[in-house]
Image (cartoon, rainbow, N blue to C red; front, side, top):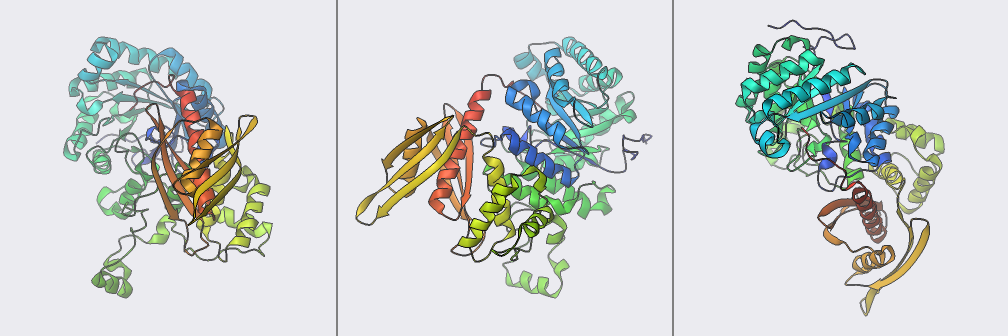
Length: 525
């Protein structure tokens, strides 16, 4: 049994599981999930409402956009540790330190690969050179701040004895958190849990640091592996909202948190997450990155608390615990009731935003309230999700290169659908017209002409945000160019306008991604 030491908040490291959220770094590496700086700040503020312990805000050296994103997030939140990822070279570390220097609680996350396959083919370094790099990097960072996390990339495929030597050197050099990532999703729970037990027994001063788990979901085992790690002494889990991330994704934050909360009898520990902010966080991220949550997604999917079978329905009506191990209100699922109308005033609107977890101080409130009043004139019923859609649409347009100024479409059973768009491109306006197989097709062709953009539309989907024929329509699209894939999202009561907004949003994301291309380093835990 190791002796527990307190963290910066005075809590025993064995008292709770810290939640390290990497939605803004590893999550953003999910195909199509690129976010602009304002969107990252919006997500970061929601993560603070969730009460996560750590926010990994980005990879500061990868691009000017990533650096600015980390810097802005570091200034936007006060309670979580905010850190940037960095490789073991000094320029990476200096850039990361500069990005978080204004944070109330700054940190850095340094990583290097430790598996023989990565050493040989990626790093082209031997084991001794990697050990020396760990010493230099962690020691240098320690001279500037205290919160230093060190990660052994591809740890689950590393030699265990060598892995122990690397971890021991990182701790000796000043690391306060040691992360053992299953970078490729290769591990299984029994093996992954046993690895932590081995390291905590063999590594000198193992009881002086927080051990962390970072799992990928290639075999669908990320959550199971993380829970196995917790049962073997891990007190930090690295995860993302909705489980987004490279390839098959990362450990799902909401699944780990609710597993700990629901089965505290088994794990004996819990997180400090405000679970009532889980559903708002899931919806906010989904709307910002334009990726719908699958209906059968545990915890936050539309079907998570739905009961179709007659026997289940009968049981739930008699007593909810017959088929529900959690209550919808525990994760903040809204009742979808009528909240406001066209006679509602500005004060009522602001108060409702606060109840939904949105801080009005960071919005262009005049613009959002005007859009709300316009929506009230179009819809008989306004729901919480309608309001959230307006808020995310406002954040989505911040700093955009392309902006839709006007759209005209025409169609009938006796004519070919046509569209004319006026698009702001940088500081100039461009107008173009096109015909197509339908109004949306014509609209997209006209936008491509105005933007002089040659892209491929890989996916287009429409769903209703709320019910009724006057509901806001949410359009998600996926576009690609030169091997880059980005998602776009738009919401509007007119589905063609929502389609246009989604496509323009995708073009803006592509512009952002292309700006960063060529500078973003490969790799990461």
